[in-house]
Structure formats: C-alpha cells, structure tokens
Length: 214
Image (cartoon, rainbow, N blue to C red; front, side, top):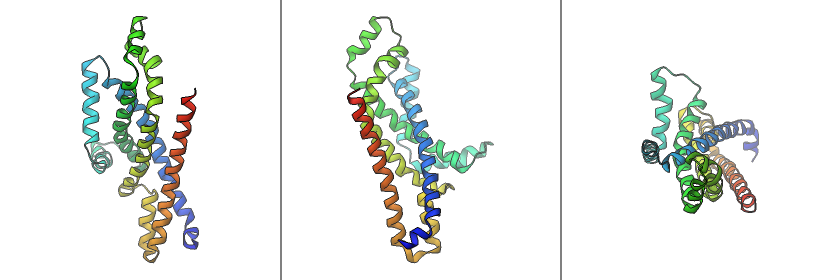
C-alpha cells in the first residue's frame, strides 16, 4: 500500500485521463447511437441502409483497428489533434454501434399501436419518435446501456497503446521502473477499475428506478 500511496498522483492522474476519455466518448456515443437507432427504424430506405452498414461494420471490427484508423490513418490525411482527442473519437465511434442496438431494442419494445396512434393524429415520423417512442424506448434501454457503458470503460484501456496515459498506461509505465511491484500494481489498478464499474452500475440502477416510477 505504501508503494501505491507514493505513486498515487501518477495513478490518479491516469485514471482522471481515462475518465475524461470515457466521459466524452459516452456522451458522443449516446447521441450518435440514438441517431443511428432512429435511422435503422426510419421509413426512408437510404437512412436504414446507412445505419445498418455503420453498425454492421463497427460491431464486427476490432476496437484496436478502430483506434488505428483514428490515430494513424486519419492524421495521414492532414488532420491533427491530440492523442486524447483521437482516442475519444475512436472509442465513441465504436461504442455508438452498440448503443444503437440497445436503443433499437428499446424502440422495438414499444407497442406498435403507439406509433400508429401518433400517425393517426397527424404526427410525422420525427415527431412521433421524439415525443412518443424514444421516451419509452430509452427507459427500456437503460439496463443494456449501462452494460454498454461498463464495457466502454473497460475498452478505454486500449487507448494506452495509442499515447493516452490512462490507467493501463500508468500500470505499464510504473512496471517499467518497479517490476518487483507487479502484483501490488495489478491489484491496485484492478481495484481502481472495479470502483468505476460499480459507480457506473449504481448510476444506471438509480436512473432505472427513477424512470420506472416517473
């Protein structure tokens, strides 16, 4: 424990970087994933095809390859950004595909009569989706979205291989200088990740209970 305390600033800074990465990636993934879900149930065929293509490609692509595209391929086109920025885009683009499927499942759980009633009173597809379907769908999607966010937090460790100094990166750097503390470091970093996982689970359970009785 003394060793971990002596290096607590390095570890906390790394976890802070990981939380920034995951926080922004979660925000973008939730927005993009929800839009993709709407596209996949849209009555406009090109939108359905585009949404389906995106999800099919990203869900069947290794996360490491997604990071390589954003951190290596895109910069070769002349775009520049910090490693953390590219990591946010890579993680959010990848996670959005899984958010899409969680939200789409929620949309499918809404009785068809709800959409038919909305159309009967003159609502457009966009209006019925925004005012009738999505509010109910998002309630049903809370548990799978919680699991997706937990998976995203754990997936953020991949960023350590692409220049982002998050928790796994801190573990690697400290092991280079203190190989004899391998078990102390592994246990300490693992506990840190578990604390965040439990926190995410608690937040989504709270949201689920709140929306259930709203």
